[in-house]
Length: 172
Image (tube, rainbow, N blue to C red; front, side, top):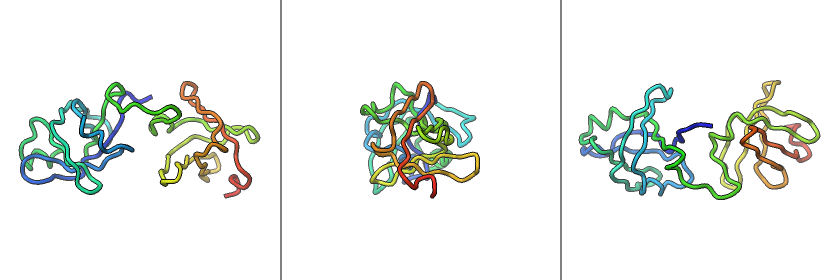
């Protein structure tokens, strides 16, 4: 499991006082209001820099965030493209039966009837319910709706997800 959880991506600057515009990668963008200690990651995760958030406000679907020591537009612009990440200890606590997407990626999906189906490569968030994208050996992705009738067991310790496929799902 990842030690750091990405919660946003810096997509630009805001104003001239060092604020950045952040696209939230979290179900609860209001979590930025309590954000303090975090890390700034490059896209390939090769560079990790500690940072301290000192203020957040909201503008449409973005978060306007201020970091300690970033006091002008040029310094803020240098952060564009970086991911904002927190440690698991500083992450929002999840409700029972919910999971961080990064923990689901790479889990083996098995079916009671068909055996191993493949590995979760992505999770699509549709609004009604999430969809697990399962990469299969035949290079054709399988889309599995995350609903009670389909998802039978998620075992993050063993990195497996057991499902019951509804009629026709394998044919899509």
